[in-house]
Length: 212
Image (tube, rainbow, N blue to C red):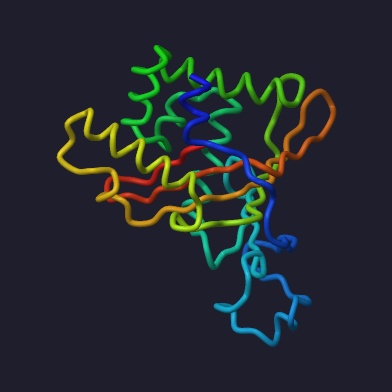
């Protein structure tokens, strides 16, 4: 199973400067390399210049509002919460069903067991039972800028072919990008932040899916 997941997922170094989050409707102002925020059009600002915080989801999230929609971030929040609570129904609601079938067929794991494995890996990282406290998207890459996104697409195209679906996975994609997230959590009275968590978002004709 580790080989299956490793073939499509990889951690990368944290990239890009990051500005702190404002409230739900606030943008961050301040100096940028080459000039101040006030001197630039929003479209020309780098990722992280207009950060937004939303606390209405299961886990608070922070992201640049120009690049990511609120509903996408709510799904990302749901994904991490599903891992934390081992909520199989919630996990399935943000996952591609053909991918979950692929995992089951190639590892013999049910979705419930697969989810337990993801949680167990996180418990090993932080040393025990944990609670996610904050998700901060520090960088975003389009599917053309991120090689691992392409690996997922190739895997899913083959999976769709194996399942004899009429469409390729590629033909269903409307948008796709890779997020680098600072994932904060608490465990055993201590706080932890993992800055290297990659999450892949695919907005498709038949739904939006989270891969991690």
